[in-house]
Length: 503
Ligand SMILES: *[C@@H]1O[C@H](CO)[C@@H](O)[C@H](O)[C@H]1NC(C)=O
Ligand SMILES: *[C@@H]1O[C@H](CO)[C@@H](O)[C@H](O)[C@H]1NC(C)=O
Ligand SMILES: *[C@@H]1O[C@H](CO)[C@@H](O)[C@H](O)[C@H]1NC(C)=O
Ligand SMILES: *[C@@H]1O[C@H](CO)[C@@H](O)[C@H](O)[C@H]1NC(C)=O
Ligand SMILES: *[C@@H]1O[C@H](CO)[C@@H](O)[C@H](O)[C@H]1NC(C)=O
Image (cartoon, rainbow, N blue to C red; front, side, top):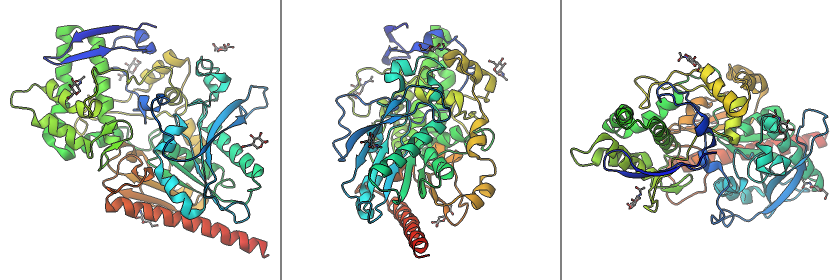
């Protein structure tokens, strides 16, 4: 793989040192103009899903034990494949224990290091004591330390070794783990409540539907389970991102919308097509993540950021002195995202959405989320979803053919209201409308017990974050309803247990 390191003066007077570091697939991708290159669905977490660096102390905040459990590589065949060690974090500190049927709070680990999710899911830790609940954070296979074939290198080798990285396998891992854990603790009768945010929220909702005998309910936060096939329009995501900028300032939206053409005209001067394309992707991913973490208070979820970060970005873009060029404004703006603390010497354009990355594999197999960028409502370059070109990229990167219709066969999604109303129960779909993923989520109450909690000002699973003195009232209220609903699930479970044992 080519590692180029080329300091260069890019874009007007701005010195940006572009470091291409470990971008395996870039070298092999043909140079297509940004306007026609395929647009992958934005990743939930991007490179932030990678294992945290050694110097980051995520675990300090909450007390838990780290354990490992031997899992089958393939739950759905009887072939003789090696097993792997699944990591899980567990705390029984506040647990009522098996005799008193203490609940088990189970976070469905998503695409990254589980310690990072544990550190960023304060809600579960904070409410566990009042429920007398055990807390378990299992890691998703092929992420963090839970690597089949003993190492990430081996696990990510090719389509054969990656074949077991699927949502179905992950749900089976969770279910087997719960059963085994309960057996070891003689806790078979204890109720399990699922939690999850983003892809983890999708897993929580799907697990409640697929394994109703294993878990009594699920809090599924910011989970775009409808972002598949044609269930929601493909423009949804980018329209919401763009709306979040327009809402702060129309001129900010306009400047960003203009900037792509300016960038392209720079490119014809410079003949640095590759760089322009990378730069566009780098900017796009900043805007996407900003919309996801557009929290009302300063937070350090993806990056250290001020409260209302999009407002701050737009202040920079709009507030530059008269005569400032479009690109200079843009870079001032995204510096709020990439360099808020001022400690970044050079920007690394390594937020590459392609390559041998777990989520990209999932996106190229099951998680096919069509994305377009509309002409007017979107501030991004116009793009019509092109499945063939997406498929070609997947073949190039992984030698795999996507199955775009599989998720809806496996978990449903079309006409979800009709199907879940009768056959589902006890799921909370929580969403903030500022979050671009909210457009592919469930925003309507489907039944008495399949409930949508929607907040106007919320962003990506803000309800799962730890409480803070700056929490706005609508967030306190949202969490209070969630707690009440979970209490009612557990209460009903106990009542039914009692009724049955009295029969
Ligand atoms: C993938 O790698 C494994 C292990 O090295 C090898 O046995 C297998 O043949 C490879 N599969 C493909 C499709 O290249
Ligand atoms: C249950 O106990 C067995 C025997 O001690 C152990 O090997 C296994 O890992 C335990 N399972 C879990 C889920 O902790
Ligand atoms: C990051 O911010 C600091 C402080 O404003 C500045 O000195 C530095 O040049 C910035 N880094 C980049 C890459 O622009
Ligand atoms: C879609 O992508 C395919 C393969 O890259 C290409 O041949 C085709 O022209 C594209 N279609 C449109 C409408 O751009
Ligand atoms: C759904 O019902 C809950 C009460 O169970 C209510 O708080 C919530 O506002 C309703 N959601 C919507 C989108 O109407």
